[in-house]
Amino acid sequence: MVSTDKHMDCVINLTSAVLAKGKQVSLFFTGNGVLLAMKPQFKQLADMASVSICDESFRANGLHDRQGKVPRVTSINFTSQAKNA
Image 1 (cartoon, helix red, strand yellow):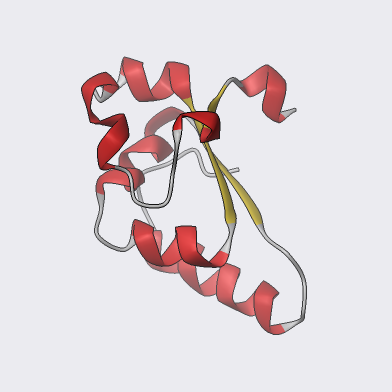
Image 2 (tube, one colour; image 1 turned 90 degrees about the vertical axis):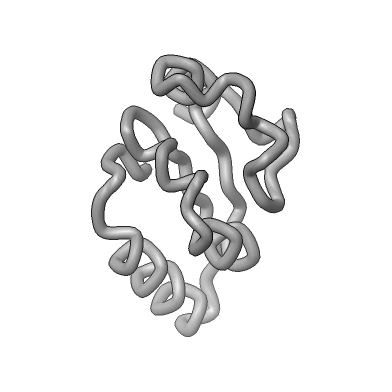
């Protein structure tokens, strides 16, 4: 779960380390963490992991009209915190 828009490099490095151990990675972006979906590095994460984004947080951060701009993410990947839990 990623709930902050800080430390994208740490999220990428941690994801890479987990993959190097032969594990699968699932990431859920919520709160201000959804803002990371607008950064160019997000594509790298989406290529490495299964990604879900909290639809409510995405809308609350004023991004509701930018869903189609998130790389490797479709409408199915926009979900609720309840479904993620």
